[in-house]
Every structure is written in structure tokens, then in C-alpha cells.
Amino acid sequence: MLFGPESSKEFNLSPQSYWKQVTLPQFSPVRESIKVDILIVGGGNTGIVTAYLLKQAGHRVALIERGRCAHGSTGNTTAHLTSVTDLGLTKLVRSHGLAGARAVWDAGVAAIDKIQEIITTEKIECEFERIPGYIHTSIRGEHDETFQLQREAELAQELGVSAKFVNRVPIFGREGIRVPDQAKFHPLKYLAALVACIPGDGSHVFEQSEARVFDGANRDFVRVQVNGHMITCQQVVIATDVPLSGINNLASATLLQTKFAPYTSYVIGAKLPPNTAPAALFWDTSRPYYYLRVDHHLHEDYVVFGGNDHKTGQAERTNDNFVDLETTLHRFLPTACVDRRWSGQVLESHDGLPLIGQVVQRQFVATGFSGNGLTLGTLAGMMIRDSLMGRKNQWHDLFDPHRLQLRGGIWNYLSENLDYPYYLLKDRLMPSENRGLESVNPGQGAVLKLNGQRVAVYRNEDGHATKLSAVCTHMGCIVHWNEAESSWDCPCHGARFDVTGKVIAGPAETPLKPVEQIQGQNLDAQSSDR
Image (cartoon, rainbow, N blue to C red; front, side, top):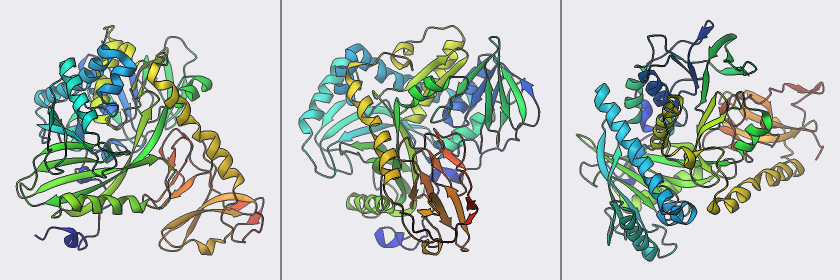
């Protein structure tokens, strides 16, 4: 097989993640009303692990997923299992003190240990392996962060964290920190086996089942309407990326949603000749940072390389991010043969820590994992299980969704949410493209102003135009076309919709409204209203 940049051109790059080559078991939709102890909404890693742990603890659970389990954000992961956080130990100590920083680190360690324990208990073949991680200076050469990394390594020693400074990390040849005992696995092989453990003995898994109406009026139970049927339960766990309101009141739910910001991250996968690079995880100090994972297989190695994060819906020419990733990867691994590319969404919280716990009586949430969803999603399942069993969990106060604003998070909290009024006004005041439908090329989309209203127009390869309201159903911002993912993305709070208007990612809970005619006028007629 040929390797290198030229060989990449021989392939039509797959738009699906490397993990989605695995077929998960399928589950039927909700077709009748049922009663369980706990309803888990969201069939990604967090929901599956939480449902599994709660069933193991003796609860009857129902896990519902509006699409296919593990095919949303979980299916687009880069599958780093790590206790390393985006904040770094120095910032953690500054914001949360020495004890708090060590607690955050230990949370990742405990979650990886739990994943390994589950794999061993259930005898899951999913390529789990302990490997080192490396944090290293910027591959863009933006600044010399050597001193800061040396300080991080010293602080790690002070906290009892096993990490040390090295003069040259593998592949990139730059100064960095080696962190032992991190891990990697194949996430969908793992979750395919785990989700199959949930049904039976009064527990259920349902797909194509969206929670429509939540009724928490009765103090003794919660009723949730799904596919026209009712699921009655004692507790609800919202395990969607952006938490649904559920039984939480609108003001409180909206306040919770302002505590995180959605970012889009870009990823490429590539084959390498065997033993080209050591199996490891890498993160550099660029802003936004690049990250790399190297796997060894029998006949070839495989790398997952990503970065170029930006606020969802707030970037033009999104395909350029993939071009940059491929160019950058070939600087350091010239024999890499890129065969696929994809993007994923991560939620950054206001203070860099996840939000895990009870938000209102009988309802829990788990969100704000800052790109570390497989590890922290597992921790969320552990914490929610402990809470429902009346156990005190050492991370309860630190990750409580109602925690008081901590010292280091005030500015981030305010600055992240300045985007909302900016984009709301900017996009409503700016004229949309004054073009007719015929100007939208096949396979592309654009927001046009037709008959005085903003319309999100997508034309498929056959030439058929789908016309939707361009107004996001969350809080009324105007969506933007994402050429890389063929989706409509909201720049205010990161909601995403497919070309038919269906919700891909929240906080929006309802689809974009289809528009065939506006005020009785044919949309194919171009408007001169600016």
C-alpha cells in the first residue's frame, strides 16, 4: 500500500468517523406506556454508562435516544481517555486551590479505572490499552511555553501527580510533559457491548424515541411523553450534550444553558506504515490546540488528528480547517495517508469544570465536558449512581451545576455569552444575500432574503431546493450554513440542524420550520427587499 500525501488523493475521504465502521445493536422505538425507576434521556456514552451503572445497582431503567445510540457526539469523538484537562494544573490551582486541582485530576483517574473495570467485568474486546500522554509546546511556534510546562511538571509533582518534563516528545520533537497511565480504546466496540447489557429484568433501551413533553407536576413521579406514549419514572437523567429543559422551569433551564458554550472541532483520520510512531496521546499548547492519537494495529498504524476549534456557527470556509489539519499532519508524519475526516461538537463550561448533578427535584444533568466526554461522561454515571443511592461522592460540590461562581470563572462566563446579543443583532440587521434560489449550487446552502423573510435554502444534488425558516428555534438567532458538515449552525448557542431542519444538537429542541410559501407568495421569486 502507498502512504503519504499523494496517496491520500487516491481515496474519496469518508465523512464518517473512524469508529462508525462498527455496527451497534438496534433497538425498537417506544410503542407503549411503561413504568421504570429512572429514565435516561440520551443514548451517547454518558447515557449508556449511566443506565448500565444504575441497572447494576438494582434500578429498573429506560434509556431513550431520538436517533441511533452512540451515533451523535459520541460517535464523533477522538477517544482520548485522560485525566489531563484543558485548564492545566496551574489554572486549576489558581481557580480551585491545591485540593480542588487534585480532585479534578483524580476524577479523570477514577473514571479511566472504572472504564477498565467495566471492560474486564463484561469481557469487552475494544482495544483498551494504557498509553502515555504528552503535553508539548505549540507546533505553530506561536510562543515559547517551555517555562510554563516546566512549572506545570513541578506542580504535578507537588500534587502527587505522576508526570515529568521531557526535552523532546515523540513525533513533534518539542519540549513537553510526559503523563503516564492514560488510555485509549475503540469507543463504539465498547459501547456496543455495554448497551446490550441494559435490556432485561424490567430495563429497556429505545431508539428513534424522542422525549417530547415532561410532566413533573406530581411530587411522587415524573411522566414523559415519548412517541405518543408515557414513561412514568421516579427520576430523570438528562444525558444529552446540551441539556433539555425537562421538568426544570424555563428561566432556570435557560440560566443553566448560559453556563457553557458549544465549539466545533475538526478531525482527520490517517493510515501509517506499522510502527511509524509510538502509541500515545498528544496535545500541544496552540490556541486552539492540536491533538493527536496514535494506534497500533497488526498491519498498519492509525492516527486521529484534530484541532482548529471555533465557536459553533461562527466560522466561514469551514473546509479550510480540514486542509490545515492535513498539511500540518504531513509536516510531522509525511507518510500519513488520510482516508477520512469529520467534525464534532464539544461544550466548554463557564469555569472549565463539568456540570454534573441534580438541577431540580427528580432531575439530573451531565454536561460541559470540554472535549473529555468519554472520561467525564463515565464519571457522571458514577456520581449520579452514588447520589441516587444516597452515597456521598467526593466530586459532588466541585461539579454541582448550582455551584457558586468560582474565582477563575467570572470573566469567562460573561465573555462567552456576549456572543448571543452580538450575533442576534448582527445577523438580523445585516442584509441577507439578495439572490434567487437558482444561485444556490447543488450540495450547498445559503440564507436568502425572499419575500422579506430570511430563508435557509439547501439544494440537493438533484437540484431540489429545501426551504426552511432561518430563525433558530432556541432563542431566535439566524442560522449559518456549514459547508464542511452540510448543516445549519446557530452562532449564538451552537444549536445545529440538518438540511431538512431536524435538530442535530441542542439547545434547540424543535426543528427549523419548513417554509414553502411566505405570506402566500411564491419563494422562487427573488425579493428586492433589503
